[in-house]
Length: 102
Figure (cartoon, rainbow, N blue to C red):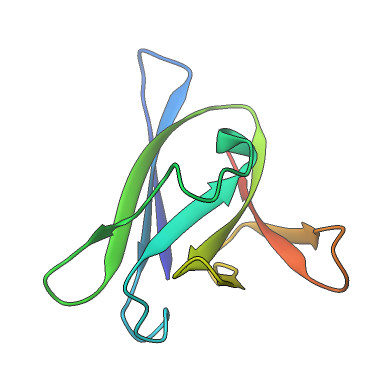
């Protein structure tokens, strides 16, 4: 898992690139990112499948904020990002959300 941040000089925006290897998603055929930035919509931000079986997606996010998010594998399994800046309780049982700080 990796997260890369590219802060823009001309706008209060950061291009955030999320990437997951095929091993990290346990062979899932579809991965979505749900979080504060898309009102936890489970279908709006589908990651692109790469030739090596990994998944990636770049989002433009407003700087000066923290965003909670998780990955949804094949519409049924939630996972966190090991490269997240922080974690916080999700409010659902003992699960946590990944947090990215911009």
